[in-house]
Length: 355
Image (cartoon, rainbow, N blue to C red; front, side):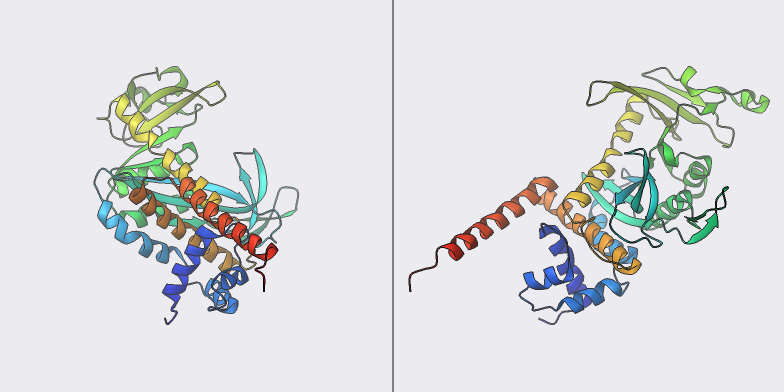
């Protein structure tokens, strides 16, 4: 068979699902019995062919099948630590809220289209710190020329051209007025977003005109929704409060803002629960499709590997629906069979057949 770039991208994403350790060009070549040279694989990763457009081409056929007006678009970012990789524009120090400090790694923002019980990544943006500036102490530091909120709006705008969705879901990081306006006014869609408890709202249009604002903590009783006004928005939103129990038994509070005023408390809660699908996606690409396990050194090859890992997620998600096994069960099945094969090979080596 003639190996094209399309074939090779397909093979590389398959390899990422199957490999147990570092994902390398030489490792993949060895698995294929050297039928494809490691140089050819390296050239693919450095070609720039594996990009966001390629990701959409992989997701498009499935999205066309599951496309629905009841679909939701989930936007979230994550940091994957790459402590032993040299810094460049894509590998930099980013604040990771899960550990409460800055770590060296890649910071990426994904758009997940969730519909008909499937989660499809339809876009990804990488935070590139492409500018060198001086901080207040005169020390050099790197920053991005494009903010996370600009990336957020780019992803929503791109998804709007490709899939139908009723709501955009995000955590409190992206719940700024500019993003809300863009979704409601420019895209004609609605949103359900978490909000930080220090946000202030007006209880009526008259209060807004008078500049009279109060904390959402004081006006959002649990179990109901209340219509309020934000200073920077020309349209009203609803606020609801949820109290939940964490895994360690402690309780937490979540304030949700929705632009669709017809939603009940239960509907807001049910819709926002779908945001958890992006956390499942983050866990899967990091554990099952070798997202953090590439020793690539250039920005182009690193980005190619990361996107190929997301393409591998699409394959696992499709298989999940077909087999009714989750991503981790599928990965366990692959690794168990790989270990069995290794075991039999070990027995053969240690017990050669008598001549």
